[in-house]
Image (cartoon, rainbow, N blue to C red; front, side):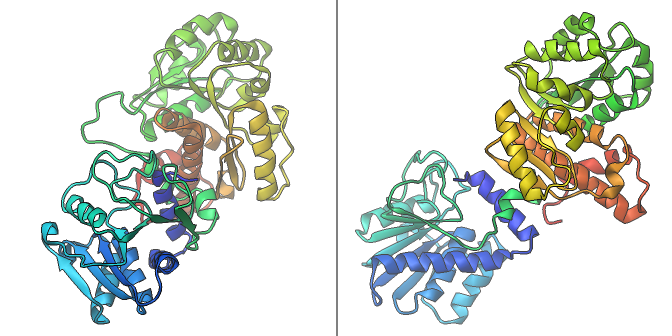
Length: 479
């Protein structure tokens, strides 16, 4: 089962894999025609009521497959207002073939005649809310005509996620939906058509996964998260890289809680970081009151960069996680205590293969990516947290849902790239769920590295990723 939002991402990822959208529309239209054939014999009268998006484009294609029926296409609106190139191309193909294709400029004058079947192809799964004109008048005409109604993807006016209709909606006898079932559509009336989208369009992270991000023009300060990085002591660069990456990934405010002994060095990396030091030269249980009070006022905590693995530090990590119920990215040495802690926190853990073994997880160093994915998913289900296991193929899973990222290159074996990944994941975790945050952070981090190596060759620094990270996250979706 797939939500409409995720379906849009999968469509985009399929295009990035080389499966042309025009090819998918051809398959969708064929599936719609097959649905018509299941409810009416050749020669029957079919009225196809079409919107100006890809849903209508599917019906334009279907009409070409229904040449042994008395089919009429009714386009709601001017042909010049058809919203996508592929839908427009299929409209022109109908006109060129002398099909009965009519332009409905006023839906109140829509005349369906006395059809045996009506194909509802006005609006797809991405549209929510009550129907507006001209679709509302058209839905009323469809419901009044007494024909068998076949809806394309979802009955117009019905929310494909909830199954609810906030106003007038098409009363469909049959629904043909594509690729996978939608949460709001069930029952014998629904047919799921395979239109040739590869499984990997959903499994492999791609440009479509950026759709979980949004940046409304009326957003206020803090809307995109405040991130606390807890790190430093033995190392100063790691918490600074994580904090800077969180800023580059879109967090509104980033603070770093680090030992006072290294606070000045951490601050020196970036003026925009807000440093909140605690006493000492490393994290210990004595600093936890300070860290907890800071964490309570942040959307996410990135815990681990540069902390080291001293006994008192790991004890502090255990105590913090045991009493924390917010969202956290756990990285580096802090990872090893996660399986032994009973916590109400929502964790995104970011180990490499060696750190995964230190957590008590499987040895996936030489495993094929498919075997790796199965093993990591089993371990994620066991520990009850989302895992992002870094490697040539990054594996992201919460034990049920799974993603694999293929961006990145051998130049990213340099130290610090994992700190950048952890910081970016922390920023994303403030606004999206752990699986999406981990998948998108891995994709953007790797894509940033790929662009640097393509441009400059090997020898990149982890800090080089920072300038590329915003474009990797927010760049054009047609890349």
